[in-house]
Length: 438
Image 1 (cartoon, helix red, strand yellow):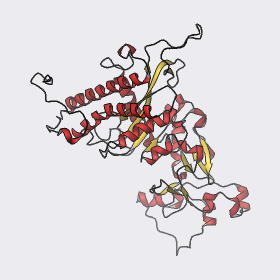
Image 2 (image 1 turned 120 degrees about the vertical axis):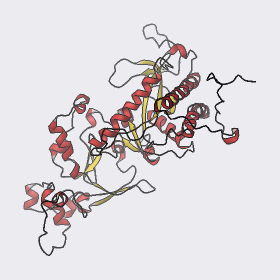
Image 3 (image 1 turned 60 degrees about the horizontal axis):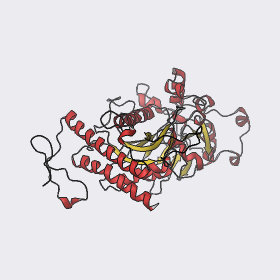
């Protein structure tokens, strides 16, 4: 464990020195703290083990890396990469579709490991190293693919939330739809909802494969939008322990649905008379109870009202406290944005595109971490250092291209050598190259 920690510290220093440089140059000035995490293959130079010839591989720390949806593996290591991402404006914003902020998509962290090992913990390790950098960088969204959704909550979801990140996740085909219950509330595609949410709305994504999810028809899109009023409302943001308060959608001064069950259990004092509605005021008419969806209860319940003890907990006490880990293994599904909603698309799609862009740049012709001939040494120690050096150079290239593209010149500032243990850029000569050593 100590050797692994020392090796990872060396890797972190090589990568994060470029983050310090970018921060000093103001590259993160408009960044909101959004991060994408992904795992990409790093092929090995040596031959894989052969069952036919009954031979093992010289690269004993490597394994088979399988990308999502691929049946052919790559023999080598897996690199967990963090990217400084950028979301799009949520639906309804006047600049809808444009990115929030302008920042270079730098690699913020790297962990090299055997394929399929410690997928969630490696991402948390990279996030911890970034947090310990001491730059007071913002904390925003954390988008990840289904490999991270499958991790145990204690390995990824819970520690990521403790660091302050809002998760943006995708699901496998058998994980979509109703995922479980808590205090009687339905966990529908990551969000707790009213127990009486209509079945066509709750099950609209059940059994859908990836192709259909990416190309929903008009009916499915409208049903996903119709879920919104039935979700439990956030009454109180996370406290220092990470606990949140959620409220029944029929409760509070601004309910999003009308519910006969709630009206029976929590009767309100009668008003003096009917309220006058200004039909020319859109906000006033939308707030009227008749304009809100009505929760449908069974005819049997209408004929014979059950005892309160027979009803779900969320109906008896319309406010619940959700602590970290209260959902058990279902906690890995929970995220801050409603799955497949416009707000989810505006976050997940661009951040994942930033991940793929970084992977493509890392495997491009300029550096190409996927070319084994550039990493002939074997063993995870040598491979980690070599890949970290490559990522360091990629970040420097991205930062240089960023300044050239935006026209923003880095500030001319001299940093004292005792400021930190980081590498200090040498002054450039007229030909653009650093002076020779004395």
